[in-house]
Length: 161
Image (cartoon, rainbow, N blue to C red):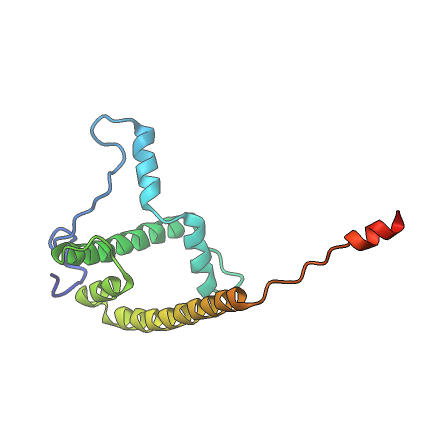
């Protein structure tokens, strides 16, 4: 769908459509618009936490920088997810999976990210498969284990009488 991405290409030129309502439009309730705006963005505390991980411990991040990054990463996620969703729609599928996201990243020119994410996805699936196999082994062992012996203390109780 997209051949190149750069600063001279707007979202509309790339065929990107935003599915999010923007606050302040159409005479609706302003609070409803604010909720929609808040729902479409990643939590700013999480964005700030991620930003701090890469900076020196004594570095400070302005509120404006966090808000700008919050807008950017939210838009990026929407853009990539929209591309993956379009692929699923063309293939008549309803569920977007990790492979679709990797494909979308490559399709949009983010090949390095797509390749890295694909390697992560493979490792994740291997680990998940091992975890499920271990759960199944534990469940099978539990089902095959003999029932524990239940002792009755009735005889001892009768002797005391």
